[in-house]
Length: 124
Image 1 (cartoon, one colour):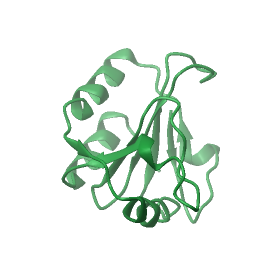
Image 2 (image 1 turned 135 degrees about the horizontal axis):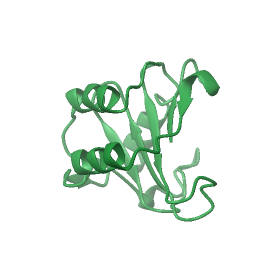
Image 3 (image 1 turned 90 degrees about the vertical axis):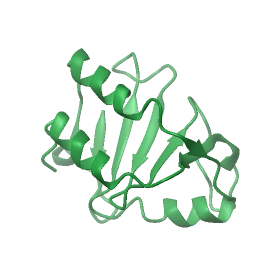
């Protein structure tokens, strides 16, 4: 599933499910070997505040459409930063709790989001 956000609001217009196995495999291949590091609690909280801005996306991978099992969440920011959450990891709260489950790309990959949007035909 891909979810786009605009001014903190998501809707059916900014959401889509991807069921094409080839496209999913291509997506995984593009992000699979990315080097990640664990940001500080402060860095992560600051970056997560940007997620509600237009041009940022949430990608959720799950082997069930209901997402009732382990899910892999990746937040793609328009500046090229990618935040990865361990399966069923805790989201970061305002006091930084849950941060140990979060990692981000060691370097920014601004071209990757454009490539993925083209691959998955994302128009929002």
